[in-house]
Amino acid sequence: MDTARDLAGGDPWRESLERSRRRRARARRALAAAAPAQEPAPAAPAAPGRTRPRRTRPRRTRPRRTRRRRDEITWGNLWAAFQVWGERARGRLPAVGPKGVAGIALLAAIVASSLAHGSQGSPSAAKADASRTAFVTRHSGASASTPASFAAVGKGTRCTPTVAPAGYVNPLAGATVKRERIDQGVDYAGSGTLVAIGPGRITYLGTTNTGWPGAFIEFQLLAGADAGCYVYYAEGVIPADGLAVGDTVAAGQPIATIIPKYPTGIELGWGSGRSTKAYAKVAGQWSPTDDADNVASAAGKSFSDLIAALGGPAGKVEG
Image 1 (cartoon, rainbow, N blue to C red):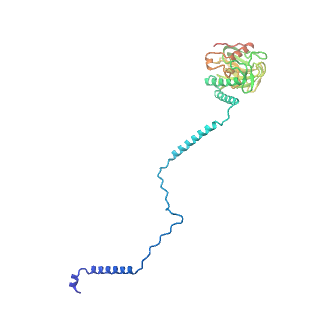
Image 2 (spheres, helix red, strand yellow):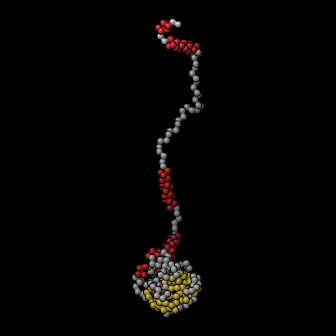
Image 3 (cartoon, one colour):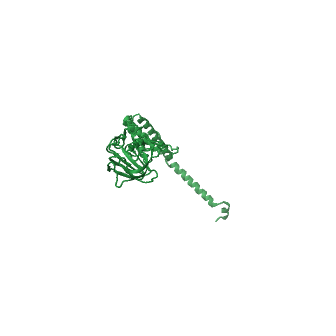
């Protein structure tokens, strides 16, 4: 081995690497020169009938409405549509004739009277009864200022209270009483038995929740000048044993017993045939103000005159 040459010639390994690289480069150039030229690959044919590239849908940028907002808009639209429909339908509704108006008024009066039932001293009840009486007066020819010509509700019977004692008896014949004021009917205080004025049929019998300070008994007269009219005995009375609604009673038959020393005494008068309401109240002749001022109703005076004609004590006109 020539040691001197190796030391003077530099790095033999690096020289060998450079020679190898040059040989490989020459081989690549020679190979490229010998290969034929390649044509570029043809482009893919365009789809038939399409001349422009497909456009993509733009992305939504508007914020979505909340559910509550959608609901509000929906209900608002419904309400607006309903109002428009009402305006259009209003002109197509049939006109209500006189009979229709009368029927509506009667229905309203019945509802008002039902709501006011059981409250004899209520101003609203008196007002409802007055309106109902006005309707009856207009359509039956009755007069609200006098007890004559009043159509009894529920039976269709025209009641004409008159002071005609023929065929009737004194209801106080079996009692000892002290006469007191006239209001819706006639007030008394005392004890004993009350009898039927004339032949009749029991239409109401109650001892509690009557709207009066005590019991309420009513019967409809079946004969005499006042046939069809109603008579009531109220407040401090006890119904006769076995008496019931629907029973037929004879003139002079015991109806009730007076409770002695009862705080409000008793009251007798013309009834209306409508639950526990007196004739005077339904006819618009009595109100809580009249009660406070001791005003005697026309119906009360009429019944007092009948009792007097039958031999009993008449009531007092105090107002």
